[in-house]
Image (cartoon, rainbow over all chains, first blue to last red; front, side, top):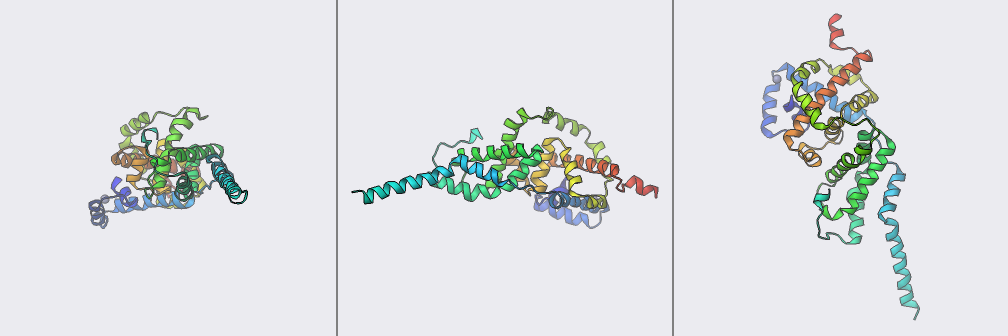
Length: 88
Length: 203
Ligand SMILES: [Zn+2]
């Protein structure tokens, strides 16, 4: 069963995949097992709602690491440059 | 995370923001979904995601551009959840993982037999909320491997890095988690009146 799962998860070794292919042709329990595992994996992937991160959290994170400060920094730099170029 | 701090200054201030924006931010919805599935609470998920991104920025010099940013971020989130969140969690204190693993090791054979009669058709008939309820009822370490593998599509190798465990342990933990999930799905299905094998045999 662990091998069936590894094949389904795309994490089986080449030898395991080969063995699985040969074995699956004539083993009903394995065929049934594979179908069941796949149905559960599909249910988890497709049926469950995928929660999205609220925009307010994205904004908070950016503010906290100082994306705002960087912008402010540019403004300050520009003002200084302006002074440098035009004040004298 | 702490053990991974690299002293070199890999990035300039400007590069830090560029890496953060291009490599980290695109994963924020997956991160939030992971946090929500771990905590089952939107506020806690928000806190956990914020925490993780602030840490990621603080330790950005230990991230190598072009490597797997998603796995790197998931690892930080998982560690934050274990170290910070679980301690102050409102949930009744969880069974230590080691206990859970030992328990399921010893009952694995019985478990195998008990789970084989869940029908594919039953699973296909279930709706998302029912699957989510079954998943939520698993101990958090089992829930975690299923989320990483089946919902986020990480490989076993990536999961081993995220969880700091050998690949063999990933495989066996996943296997146990799935057996338990099948049991939950099955008992959920029979309580909801879905057809199960026992009922089918009575026909
Ligand atoms: Zn077989």
